Length: 88
Ligand code: SF4
Ligand code: SF4
Image (spheres, helix red, strand yellow):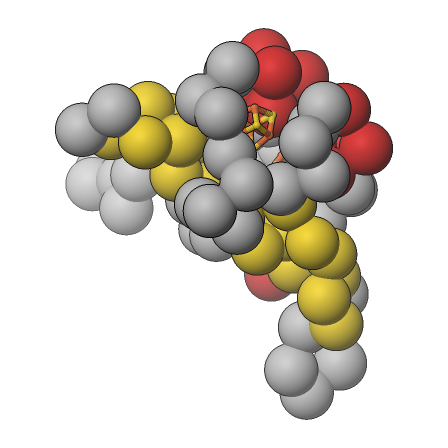
């Protein structure tokens, strides 16, 4: 069996399935890098580990981001905007 990603979630009697939890999202967090001070609070608070530090920048993975808005709420510089997901 080949997985599409490193995230697997056990569900049901027939084994494990990959869930792209980003499919559930109705709001999308968008980083404003002009305001970001790279404190890492968004990274620490994201409940599904959808924020990673890449080349010194905190970057959101939209495959798994559920759009909960916790990162935007916890950001001390208000550098993350929650915007409606297109088509939802
Ligand atoms: S919490 Fe805000 S300021 Fe801190 S790294 Fe995340 S986006 Fe940047
Ligand atoms: S909206 Fe929620 S799931 Fe998405 S990156 Fe922010 S804290 Fe993580």
